[in-house]
Amino acid sequence: MKVLLLHPDRDFAPKPSLDDAIYKAMRSGNLYAIAHVYRNLERERKSAPPAPPDGDADLTQDLELETLWRAMAGGDQFLYEMARRVTLSSLRDPEEIVYRQQVLADCLEHAEVVQELYELAIEALGSEREAGSLWSGAMPDFILHRSVRLLNLYLGRLRRLREIADEHAGRFRSPGFTRFFARVREELADDYLAAVERQLRDLELRRGVVQSAELGTGDKGRRYVFHRPPSEPTWKERLRPGRQPPSHTFELHPRDEAGFRALKEIQARAINRVADAAGQSADHVQSFFIMLRLELAFYLGCVNLRRWLDAKGEPACFPEPRDEAERALRASDIYDVCLTLHLRDRVVGNDVTADQRSLVMITGANQGGKSTLLRALGLAQLMMQSGMFVGARAYRASVCSGLFTHYKREEDAAMEGGKLDEELGRMSAIADRISPGGVLLCNESFASTNEREGSEIARQVVRAMLDRGIRVLFVTHMYDLAHSLYAERSRDALFLRAEREPDGRRTFRLPEGEPLPTSHGEDSYRRVFGEGRAAAVGG
Image (cartoon, rainbow, N blue to C red; front, side, top):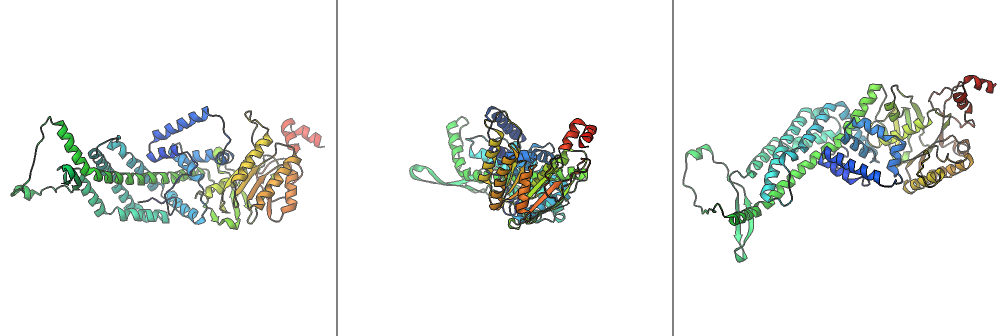
């Protein structure tokens, strides 16, 4: 039985580039194992020389995804890891995104039921510890005994799962949960559970082992067959003992250890296949609960995040994903989710209408909200393609083949080259990975050199990306770059400009506007020298 809550046709699988050790620890359901893996990775990271960041590391840093994941986790390391893995494994099919949105809508509406399912999965995964450890070289009879004990523990949790499905299935509307509960009720029907209980009772071998074999060459046994143990006699049969069928028996001397071992080996040959089948059945049930916990963990993280936003009165909506070829991008009152998680007050939202626009240039006064809007758009794209809600009143966008960021970096004493070399190196790495249909977010790129040189480099990069069918969102204070692109592409590009009041006050609104040649140096002078001196200079 499959869970199929994150994908309509397959179980969730992590991104191949992510660390396998963490995923294996997560599959075990053991929080101590996860913590141990993290400690080892941290130790290796500290001892290893610094490596150039990969695309996911850049995206995490530039969009401040750690803040998002911590809010989703609510202090739970397992929820944090699943939030990270799912958001970095973007969907590209709009129908699959809508499927996940519908499941999430059910989770938001019935969070208490989802939490109960999640805790049931954790409880079920703890059954393995209750059943005892399994060491290598264990005999088939021990494997069978442990597997039967484990399956009996799972059976109780499966009955509870069936009860939850019977009680709450009618309240869920998404195709994912509707199918999940229907499968639970169908495959865990009362007669099936009763039959499993009877078979497990037989496999406890309380009345011994019934097996048959043939004599082969050299009087060696062959074709060992394990038979169903005899049923318990009824009370009538006990009160009316009849003639017992003839049988042949032998007894071992209490000190005959060799004979005892030989007899155990004969018994093991018969029950070996049964023990293997029981072990596989236990593994199958365990895999189901592992996947149930993994997939529900992401949705519970989304529930945690939504509670944060609702408590602040921030708007949130399910976006409308569109096909990649449409080049759709329209947002109403979009805001930076990570920024609002840091602030006590609500943040200012903005409207963006960039349908059929391949280039969005954002200019204007410093500290006017340019970088914040860029990050808000990047977060919305990433959250949409994870099947999440986004921080906006309304949002519609085309899916992208990949989201990449190129932000300015602070000076690093460990760098062997200059800042411009470092920026060019990162852009070269992006060019190797990005493909048509991708989205590139640039924040003050190539500002580490003079404006003329930086503008020319950025201009060539933007032109090359647009020619390859890649959407570019660019924040810059370089007037030469913005003005030239405005002259070239004013009809198929969107130019936004941060507002500045006459007194220098920022509104953090970014309406459409042509780039201005001023850098608003008077604002900087006011901050350094005060209002009076600025007025005197202005006069």
